[in-house]
Length: 416
Image (cartoon, rainbow, N blue to C red; front, side):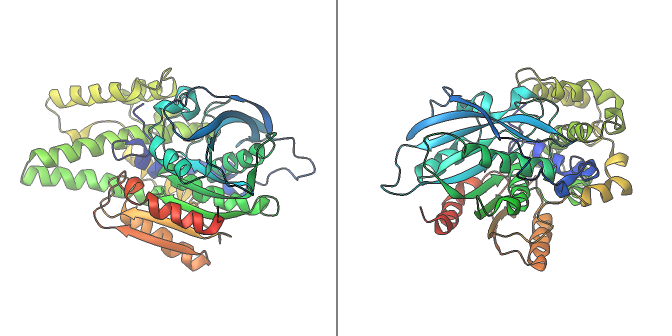
């Protein structure tokens, strides 16, 4: 898949957020799942080894691949992986400050797990910036990526516990001086995951206190985003009919592509959460072969080119792009699904640590209205939130323009 994750070029994120993954999630336990009591909890770290596919990173003393245990979405325990980057420059005294980087959408196939090849990770720049600032960076793959089972995608409980279990596991590594306090940062799906991790972190605050959370263009309200994205396609089609232009055509094509790609990932995530759900309930019959390709993408490079080609076929047959049959609009906008999705929004409790949220006004994947509503709700609940709107920022640009501010926010609270 194209790195569906967090950049403005990666479609999957917003659409995905929009629709499903969040839906059945809660019905399967969601963020309210209680982890095992500490006395009964098995050791998180299963194995660790030196990692060789991070040669493009600089200033790194060592990179480790961790395999760790975490609570599974549907009960019991499962396994997944995380990468740990330790900076060469370390404090003269004291421990190395730890930041968890929560990755954006990459797909649902195991081959898409970021730990498969960190050198090809589309979020290398963000991880490198944290390393350059003197932080050790822990980057989990999430449940179902790099481990057994399917990836539940946007699920508060699954993503949050993927993060907190990784923090427990990294502190079981021998010979490392990592700070017990930590910070959390993510973009897009990773912004959602960061907020989910902040919810779960309260359960381990005594041992590993979370000091700060940064959510960059977070997915926050899939139901609202789904409605807005479908509406955007309708609006663009009307604008094209009134006054066609290459610029509008490009925006429309990108929006249709993102809806199909992100919606596919979200749909497949929903199947992982609710075994009774069938893919044909969420996507059109003609789109099923392409959607299934996303689940079986052996090198994480086949799904998006196939989708692109199929959209071209649809257009060459004389049909409007806005009618490209991918997701079933009736399913995604049904009241039942909207209610389910609304129950699995992140940060719907008061968070213990301060949060920085950065959102581009021109974001084409996570709409500005959803971010504003998220911040208002978090403030109503009593969470400490600093909210930054970037007037000329889009979904991908803010990760570069506002990384210095994000790092300063963390540094001030971790005091490296």
